[in-house]
Amino acid sequence: MISAGMPSYMEMEWIDETVAIGSWVDHRRHGLQKLQGIDLSMNARSLFDERFFFVGRRPNTTRVIRAAELLLELSNKGVKVMVHCYHGRDRSAFVVMVYLSKKLGLNYTEVFDIVRQGRPRAKFHQDWVDILTAEINEPLNAVIPGSEQ
Image 1 (cartoon, rainbow, N blue to C red):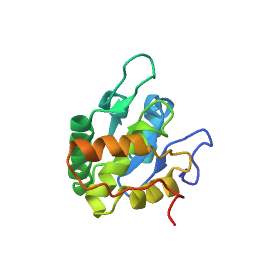
Image 2: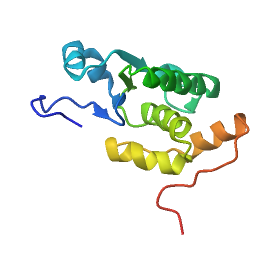
Image 3: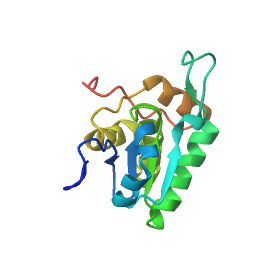
Image 4: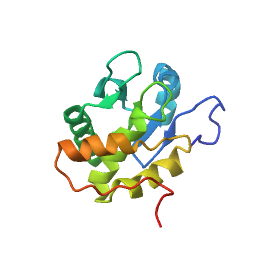
């Protein structure tokens, strides 16, 4: 969310009191990060594996879990972090979703709703949730948002 007095081109949006999601453009706007109180910028692109260009993009579960745990530790210390990828709607939203699941103890569908409230353009990737839950042996606790009966 853009704070009062912030330029309209600032795309970064806060998800909770210490974690925001932004794009590569936000990452390069160091002065605006200072105005928002950002202490650290995390590049979510490095947490995903790609086979060829963007075909076959998938989360590297070890890296995603480590990043989520790091976000949790930093959040507990009051450090403000902007998680970014290219557009700030897929990879960064997924990493923040995993972080919130650990922080709040909620399933991925519930935390995606929270992410979506803060970052309306965020996208849910059921295939990424399936990969994560299969590889870390967690119970599958997510369904596609909007498909609940």
